[in-house]
Image (cartoon, rainbow, N blue to C red):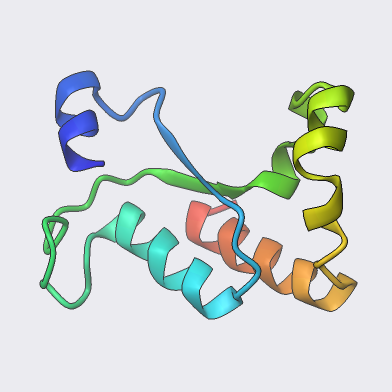
Length: 96
């Protein structure tokens, strides 16, 4: 991701997750925004300030037939409480 950000800039770059584990989403979103907190990877101390979204937040932008074919079954994995927690985490990290 750092190579892509260095080459193209971060203005039109975002991160999209499809995970259903809130803790993992939080760590990854913070890493892409603030840098790797463990300083173990290439993003250690590198704040790309990328905004992260979950694929479910982008449903309105995906054609219905594509969504049905690629995501409809996965969407069923998300109970309301789980989805609300993931959305809260990402919204907070994005500063919205």
